Length: 498
Ligand code: FAD
Image (cartoon, rainbow, N blue to C red):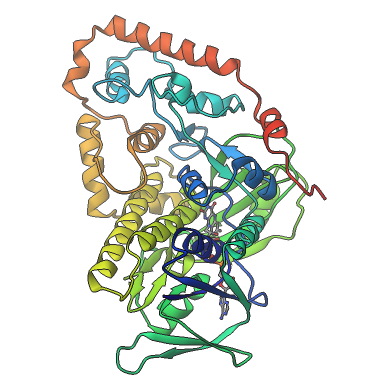
């Protein structure tokens, strides 16, 4: 099957590399990209799933990190979200030992409800403690050990990742064409895409077209006119101003998301610089004001001019229509608060590989792909909305709006279960697992009224001593671990430090 990928950003080259590597006997891969148009050039924080993607592609971690000037990420620190002055970490790991018959948070909630003076929840997570202390090591393969109760992701230079994948993809047989797509030809009878035509006049035919053209959504949104489902009433941020700067502080092994008057700002530490950006709602602040607000708080000297990005929360109604599959920003976008876009790219690629339509495209494969992707978007959407809705802030019109806005029924049901008995809705599919929801619920001050009744079996004093012993055991283990910068300098120092 002839696969044509339109777009050479992170989504395009991830797709080309994966297809070339995993389906070498099933398809040929041709990628068209336009240097004149360029890439979105942001997208530096990831989720732990990316490690599985890299492994499947045979990517060696240290080399990949050195080439993309990457750092390790143990989670996301949220500052000023529930209330000004709050700080919590959403860790890539469990709370407690992660091995009990019932989830650890039930015990913690029970003790809190009884008025016990408890260690903060962060201190009862190995990942949070490691992050707070600015240390890193690879997880112990034995998950029964505290040092094995976490995962990690990467923070990398967005402009270096796609070129790195391009090298791999081309080495595995993907063919790149430089050029701008000027027209899309449809097949008269079925309405499928028959070819894309470049400004040069070159015509590229294919059997399957992967739209990785970014926000333009050239094929799916443009040629096939698939409608966009707008979710901006729930996720009103629609712009970002990005401005990298020199790093002035220690190299934190986590991303920070710091609440701002009309949104929030990211802080992503890389080996050579710190990425910053203010994600804001244009209905609540102006571009000039957002830029000035960001400039006033970045920690070191800016190393590039501020860059404005515009977007809209939502997704195309279907990501796969006819013989066109959209992956990446061409299929939709949910703001970067939980670093989910590259994850969504990865999930779409995985589903495409698993359902690869050979020899002919089947409606059942297409429907299954769309079901999986819709579900991912819906789950992430609810998780993002929770961060905004679960605030007590009233200090700006933006925070007042998000605190009081109507929320999707699916999220309202989850919240009700949590509030009543600290219960988490379990899913077989979808990205954020229990500890993620617990971190955000409790981190933003939604303490439930009840808990799993089995948590009452342990006597309160025994429970409290157990929790304190756990905190001390975590702290003692973490204290002996290497500093993040030291670990990186040894393991994967960046290449080409110019
Ligand atoms: P792009 O990078 O825009 O690539 C589109 C490609 O299509 C380019 O090569 C372009 O040249 C090509 N193209 C377009 N039109 C044509 C044409 N007519 N002819 C030929 N080629 C064409 N994601 C994360 O996972 N973590 C983050 O921390 C994160 N932060 C973000 C912050 C912001 C403010 C934004 C807006 C996004 C963020 N993302 C993040 C999302 C992430 O940047 C994208 O998911 C990722 O970069 C993939 O983009 P893409 O490849 O779909 O699009």
